[in-house]
Image (tube, rainbow, N blue to C red; front, side, top):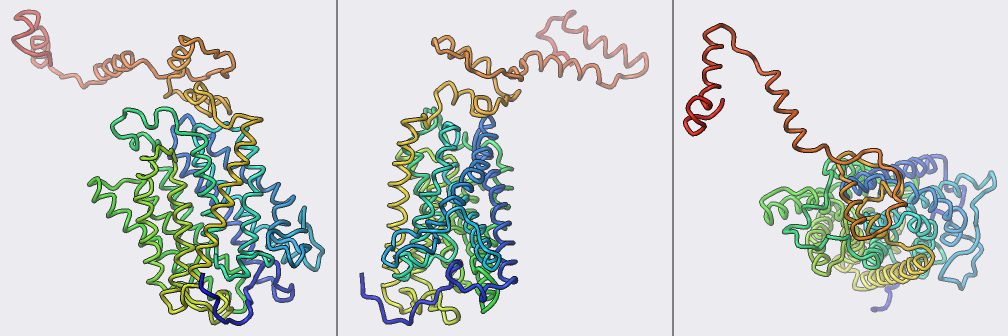
Length: 510
């Protein structure tokens, strides 16, 4: 890696290092509002992911998102924030912070500490939610809850490397304005590990002519979820200015424009790619292109020019179009595209900073460094690549160890019977009239599988099609308008009697 150019001392504004007198109620209002809106992105993730899975697993995916906030939030309060931004670590400890466990604060400090905590908590739960989509339709809910409880360890350590004052990547000058690496790359790498360990859903790579058509049960939910994430992403990136005083509001304003521009570029790529490949406008192609563009611009949203953000978004969207096909060839089943959108988009987002970032002249958030295309040399690009490598490697290794350890105690994959009946029935006692549970149970009983543990089914499968058709025909005949008058009645009866009088081959019944 090239030597670091001589720069002034890093004066990056850190939520936990900034003196309290510099953090006012204006900043706190901005940060708290941003954190609250970022939490609503859980709604967007829930809608999008539930629309990508079959109906029999919709509630289960939403319950996983709830577990991410409940359980992941608890462990982040207990120890996650302390490992990420604690103040008691040794100056020589570049790996993790220590202190501020079970977060609390004195009255004089609580504005800064609590604002920092709730803001970072919203990021932590988002990183875990990304993983849930890749595990959809075949993960044991009990095992997932344990994973959600412990995944804070996966998030808080690398987030501290980049954002904590102790972090070695921050000291080297790594830049991640709003989380392309610390949130999205980390979540995408964990999603890849989970998808590989779980294996594909049964029948996913079968003999069906087009497997992809079977994946999206409710496109309306997918689009509604995308719209929710879209506006939430604006707050996600703008709020990362961590205040509005001392020129911070200028970074928030720039982040709003670059975020929108990147998503526009990504959406255009998705539309053209989908039409070029299929002559149709497929929902998954367009949605994934938009979301990947948003992921990609996140790391540098405070530093790009308006047109550069479009380039970053377009490039990220192209990855979103190509990577899912590669994963399918490798038989890696990712129901919601988490690996392509968050993993690959996160890598590109970090690297793009090393190419396009301008030296920051206001708050010196880039430590005076510029990207390769701005005459800053290769140092920043090298640091960004190192940051991506460290984050991805940590996420892969720790997620693998965590999931393997959980699997020794609780199987992380549902049984074949549970997967066939659906997690909504097996985990939440919910059944649906459009699904033929009796046929599934009969098939497994014929194979000698014990089905005694299956919960009571309140809806007994589909209405018999023959009975339904007869009902419709009877309703049509009953409600059909009757011709009035003797002549009309005579003609109608005569035509109806023609098959009996002359044989069925001479005419058809009206």
